[in-house]
Amino acid sequence: MRRRFVAANWKMNGSRARNRQLLDALKPPLRSLGGRVDIVVCPSHLHLGETVSALAGSPVRPGAQDLFGLENGAMTGEISASMLVDCGAEFVIVGHSERRGRLGETDAAVAAKFAAARAAGLVPILCVGETRAERDAGNTEAVVLRQLDAVTGEHGIEAMDGAVIAYEPVWAIGSGTAATPEQAQAVHALLRARLREQSGAIADGARILYGGSISAANARELFAQPDIDGGLVGGASLKAEEFTAICAGADS
Ligand code: PGA
Image (cartoon, rainbow, N blue to C red; front, side, top):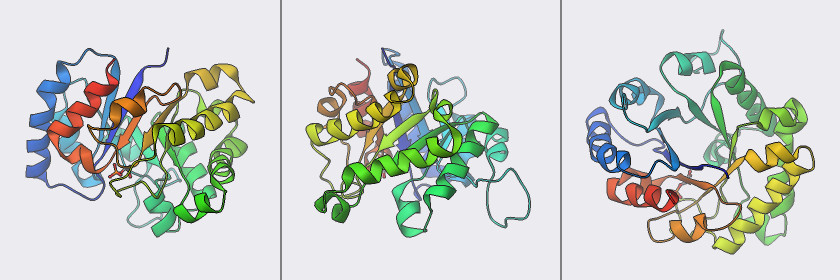
C-alpha cells in the first residue's frame, strides 16, 4: 500500500510574514491528522530557510520548486541541489509545466535536474502533463510518456525508485476546472504501466500525484482512484483551511 502524498506548490507567492501566518495556521490541524499522508510545502527559494525553521518539529516536510541541473559552478542566479539540501529541503519539484512552457525548459534539462536532485539526496517530484492543444489532437499519451521516458531513458528505471511523479494537465492548472477523476486515472494508470514494463516493484511503489485545480471539493474523489496517490496543489495550498481539507482527504 502506497502512502499518500500531498505537496503544496506556493509558486511565486508569499512573503516572510504571509508564509509565517500560513504555516502557523497549517501546523496544528495538519499535526492532528492520522499520519497516513506525507505532506510537503514548497516555498520560493528565498523563503526556504525560514520555512525549514518554521517546520521544525512538524510532520510537514520542506521542498523547493526548482533547481539547476549542475552540481555547482559558473551559472549566475541558479540554485544547485546541494544548496537546497544545505538549506534543509528534502524534496524538489522538477519540470513543472510553467517552466517547460514559459521558460523553455526541455526534456533534457528536466532529466538533468532530476538526476542532480537524486544525486544530492533530494526526492524529485517530476511533473508531466499535456496542453489543451495536445489533448485535443489526441496526443496526451504520447506527450506524458515522452516526458517520463526522457528521465528513465537517460538515467534508468532505478532513478524512479522512491521518486514522485505528478500528472498535471496544463489545461487544468489554475483554471478552476480539474480533470475528471476518470480522465486523471486513465493517465495515471498509463504512467504506472510504463514503469511496470521496466520494474514491477518500482511501479508499485511510485507515488503518482494529480495536479491542476485540486480543491477541497474535488480532492477526495480524485484520491479515491486506484492510481492517484495524492496531489500537487497550487492555488488551494495558499489557503490554510482549503489545504488542510485536501490533506485530510488524503489521510484515509
Ligand atoms: P493549481 O496549480 O492547483 O493552482 O491548479 C497546480 C500546480 O501547478 O502545481
